[in-house]
Image (cartoon, rainbow, N blue to C red; front, side, top):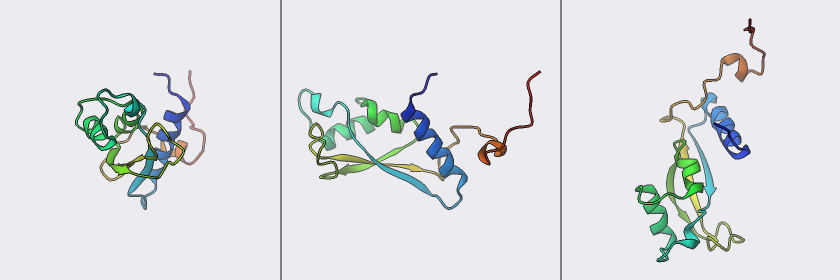
Length: 120
C-alpha cells in the first residue's frame, strides 16, 4: 500500500502519542470533502451522521475513521475560510486507551537508534 504524506504524518503522530503514557487522546478538527455536493442537500450534521452510520462515506472523514477516530460532533464557525463546508469543522478524537497499534515499531526505532539486525 502506497501511503501519502497525510497518512504517514497521521500514523507517525498516533504512534508518538501511543508511546506517551500521559496521552489519553488525540483530537483534531477535520472537514467534509463531499458534503457540498450531496443531492438532495443534507445539513452537515445529517451528512456526518450518515457517514458515522455507514450510509455514506466521505473520503476525508474516512481517512480518520478508518484508523479508529471517533466523530465527536460538528463545530460551527471554526473554519471561516472553508466556504464549501460553510465554516464548519468536524471534531474527531482518537482514543489512545482503546486503539490497537497501527504500527509495530520496535523500541529501538522509537528511540531513534538503528537496529542491530542485518540482512544476509
